Structure formats: structure tokens, C-alpha cells
Length: 259
Ligand code: UDP
Image (cartoon, rainbow, N blue to C red):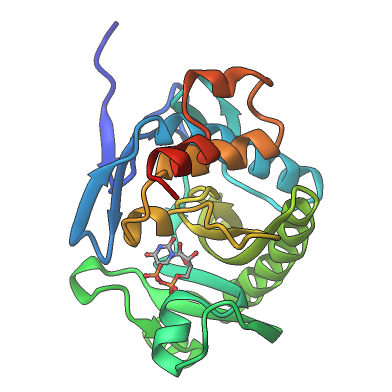
């Protein structure tokens, strides 16, 4: 097989040239980074799980009319996607205080927010992805006003949908990050959801125990990362029952750690 042309390598994914013009192949790695890549590691099997989880969520979002870059999953670690021009803004949606919001504003982690907050961060590793306001985005032309309107509308729709999806499997959607891209059709660009939605970019807490089922296990050295991602996939119905036999589940992990 001829070697595919690599277009881009990020922290958790690689993009290759797709089979047709306007398509790319998105490859999910097991690599994990946190704190602007100051902390690095691998979570065994993460790429396979994130590929599957993101496929599931993007497919469902497509079915409720949210346009996404997802075309189809190709294999365990790869999916075919539409090539877009990534808008250099990370969109964070928050339902419950956690992470940098708690640190910045001194609000205890786990506090339910009286209303959903949408925040924007400028995608720039060298600057550490600083938080920005609509004013900065407009001033520096990172996205047009029309694009920002579309992004805010889609972020709210995605949040409403995902809150319900996760609540049905007893998971609280605390916060998550979205990325959007421009899909060029002649001279007109449509804004569509891009990147991935997986436990790498979401905070997902068990509704009863508040157990973290996301990348905070890696960020905070809690252990059991692979088991947590697997638990999310299992609850979403993406792992055949019994497949958990191949790996430890979270209970076994806790027992091993004597907790
Ligand atoms: N997030 C992300 N990539 C980033 C920054 C944040 O996926 O570069 C996600 C993160 O997983 C969490 C949400 O966005 O679900 C809010 O993150 P926060 O601002 O609290 O920053 P963090 O504590 O993740 O550094």
C-alpha cells in the first residue's frame, strides 16, 4: 500500500490525505497531553474508544441537524471526514463549575451553574490558548459575526442534546470543548462542527458518585483512565456486553488500589 500523505499531526490525532478531494482521514492516537502539553503520556486503547465515541456522537448530532465534518468510520482508529478550514477558536460550554472556571473565579468544583456559560479561547499553543471575548474575535478577524452566531447556536444545541444523552446513562455533562470549521462551497463558507467529542475534551461525572469518567483522571493522576473511557463507551452501548472482561473495570481498578 502506498504511504498516505500526512497533512497534520496534533497532540491526540493525525490527519492524512483522504481518498477523494475535500476529504481527510482522522487517525486517533493513544497519546494524551494536559496543561498545554507540559504533561504527556499515553492511555492504552484511548484512540480506539475516542474514535468510536466520537463517531457515535457526531452521527447522532447529524441526525438532529447539526452539520459536522464526520463522514464515516473506516476502522478501529480512523474516520473519514470532510476537510475544513479550522476556525482558530476553542468553544467551551459549561454547565457545572470545574477546572479553570473554578480556579479563576474561586467557585467550588461541582457547583451547578444557574445558566450555561459559553467561553472562547484563541487556539495558539505558544500563547497557551488564552481566553478571549467576542470583541477580540471580531477585532482580529478570527471569525465573522455570522460565524460566531452560528457557532453559539450550534454550541447550545449540542449542549442540550449531549446533556440528555449523557443523563440517560447516568452521567453529568459538566463541561466540554468544541471546534468548528469552514466548509468551502465555491465562494461560500458554511460553519460545521469539526474535531471530536470524546472524554478527552469533556468532563463527565457519574451522577451518583461524581466519579470522573474523563481526561481529568490523567490530568490529576487519578489512574484508571482507560477504564473510565471504556465505561463511557460501555454506557453508550458501544461495547458488546462482556468485552469488559478483557480489561479491568473501574471497580476492579479501585480494589487493586485498595480503595
Ligand atoms: N478542554 C479541551 N482542550 C483544551 C482546554 C479545555 O478539551 O485545550 C476541555 C476540557 O476537557 C474541559 C473543558 O474544555 O472539558 C473546560 O476546560 P477548562 O477550561 O476547565 O481547562 P482545563 O482544566 O481542561 O485545563
